[in-house]
Picture (cartoon, rainbow, N blue to C red):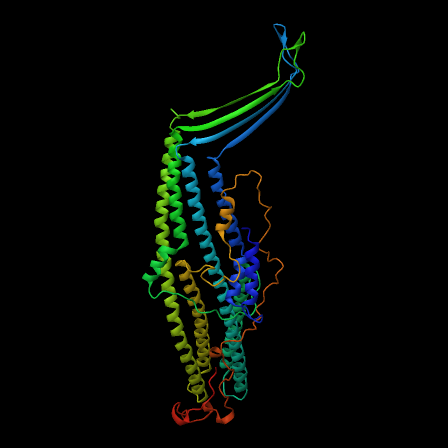
Length: 523
């Protein structure tokens, strides 16, 4: 299957999956499934692996060879008065059929089939890896857009704070140090914003590289299904269903068949052979007294050919030992992959659970920092807190908000990585079945029994589109920030003139109770 049909089906699915105003994760996955070059390359490699089966089968099928020649004898010396004809034409046809080859053909086909199965599992693994990259890129864009928005609103808040500080400085309520601190913090916030914008551009460009198209307005990703309740459950599913482990096991089986193929090199082989030839002197044969001395004619023969190796200077034993060593390596590879799968499943589960806990803590931290900022501003208005305290509270709130959106991204990506480790992150698991999915078995069945020498496929053409002409990504954000993270620039209310607390001779007012100035919280 060359891939044209499933591309059209998945593209149609992508167009119908959601409104045109926003792009969903399902659409991004569908587009990557159809056009990601890692996937299209892996499919082409799998089609190449499919061809090893008819190649192996051909060793046990009839072989027909024909030969022909025309020779012009330029110098024809005579012998006992008889000269060779100046021209000779010869045609031969030979047919052979292997009857017994020590099991090399049968085991060669089995090895090829096992490697085809391993290739299909590797194709599944590639599919899951690509989808994991898409999910990460999708969530990276959402995270970095939120971080840019958070830094933008932080800059706006600090701009208002700086203006208020300058106003209070003009009336003598603050010192030049307070204004300088506000200026420095604003400059730092502007630098953070530039870094956040650069990260957003990088994430958007990575999204283009992964999915083939720029990111529009991205919808929030849906909840992940079928996540395990504990790491043991994740490991149990992964050990039985992880495609990389399945591929390693089938490669080990293929290596076992290779040992049998090597052993056949020192066993006898029997073939049925038949052939015929025809020789013509092309009208140049000599004749004496009307009698042609050299006659055109043909011959044919048929029989059995027996081959028994007696001594090959140790070559068969070396081939067997080599195949056995490779089988041993393949067996150890199974253990290595199994260990990695177990580790990946447990690590992904731990990362997912950790990110969920970070989300819970960050949400509490954001709420606490909001109240802290409100209190610091209120206390500053009565002279018990400095401008630096306000600036620090602003920064702590921003840090907790950034940590929250980052934790949300980390939790989703870790959860999807957990599904991938369990072998549940492929197109058939993600609902991408609205179109015709790529079926590697279809190509295998198409080519397995082909025996015609002139049945080439059409010349390959690119499937994955180039991204050279896609526009360079920008840090412009149109997505609205989560209302729970929004802040309103509403700094402390400046107190002017002789009424300012630090210009009065008495002690500052209490910071609690009815005397505490009530201000609107930010956010």
